[in-house]
Image 1: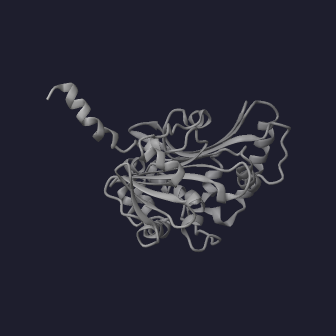
Image 2 (image 1 turned 120 degrees about the horizontal axis):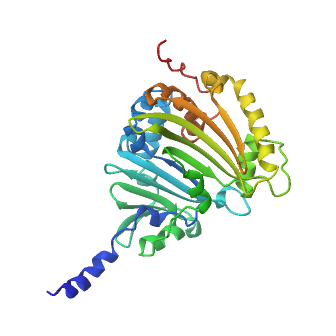
Image 3 (image 1 turned 120 degrees about the vertical axis):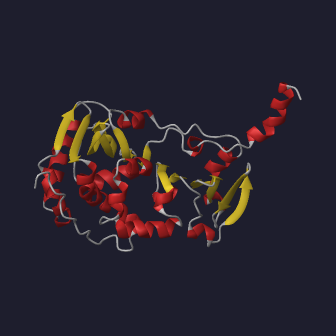
Length: 331
């Protein structure tokens, strides 16, 4: 068979290839959360976290997921809230990328989800109204994708989305160092402004048009590749320079002072003296150096617990017992 004939014969097979992970994501997304578990393992952090104060939370997460966290390399969630209304109208896509086959979560495998096939990919459709249906797609045994049916169906039928982050997200995530886990929230969107800024910085009034637009929080490895240091960095970005960043900077400093008095954060006391806050044009940046990975794990676990516990614990209002601070070199 001639090469051209071979190409045409292969076209139907090529058309059935599942889209890349990016092809499932929302276009120009501004809200994203990601945990790079593979990078955390390579930095020697994950093994320590699994035996930390987070151990019980991780075990419950595994029960809900239906597979061990050791099988996961990366979790990515992107979302877009509605312009009006509550959380019910949020469009969200969550992608689990594994290093081994991922089983279906119990809520899918044992629930009333119906099995189907789209573009050669096995999918499961949630029960309820078709307009609000959620799909669980498994384009490869090592990948699980959850999202609205109306969004995932085109990608599965050969029309993948661009799935690129917005310029704001790309700019926030840039810089030297390796991002290990992060989230970005567009706090200029009404629902998120109320739920995030309204709770973190209640009662703050910004000059007209100068309120924050985006919030980034990330755990990153900085320094030399053979001698990394962990750092938590939070950036509150404003759409333009002006008085807004100064107002935010003052509010952030007050918030940090309040956290020093919180009993649940008593294990973080040694960190407060290391915190650096910088107000620069459009950004208020808070950096917390944690030190070498092994020494920093206790702090990482304590910082992560309030974020993970509401999603995984049956008692989200409970207090997390702080681990003892890591030993300092030479002590």
